[in-house]
Length: 129
Length: 146
Image (cartoon, rainbow over all chains, first blue to last red; front, side, top):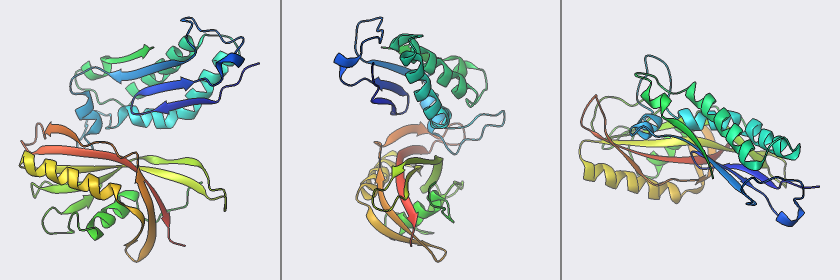
């Protein structure tokens, strides 16, 4: 038996899963051997933060500011539960569950990214630590 | 469910900033909500950034706690003045605790501002102008006055 005490999102672009009392987590598979995991979702385009934070900018071809925060807010609960379910059912390691949740979040965020050349949208990434 | 606000959090916070003396309604450093005018150069605008998050319930009375996402945006023709105003606003925001605010004769209580980020200098207002933009993101716990 194992229990997850926290699966939470912190900050603008970081997903974190914190597992408490590691001695009780028999059956939880960690590919890396670590007892905690973290996923980071972001955009590498140098102007990504300018577009994200500029609430006054108009986007005639669609998209909006806060394209990452808005996606996180809208899907936070679903992705938290997805991470917990994936690991609890044993279908994936913590790293795999974080990767999947990060990719889901990135997909939802890309629907909100303003598009001009596509460079910003294509600069999205997921990194699992 | 969060308590219903008759005015947007941006309108409420704008009024709070005016009451604090950090900005004005129509003088130096005028403050607006949700829409930034093209003039004057030096202006402050408060934006709603996300829907309120239910953050659990109050133990004594069961009321839902909610934090509204907001952004204060400072635009200035001069980098030094914009930077100073942004930091002054951040300091003013950090000092707010249990503040009564009235918007169009409707009373609200701002319990506090939390998750107040550092001032971000976004650079110039490209491509519209060379004016400088600074933003502060935070959340606000606001309820209608009972």
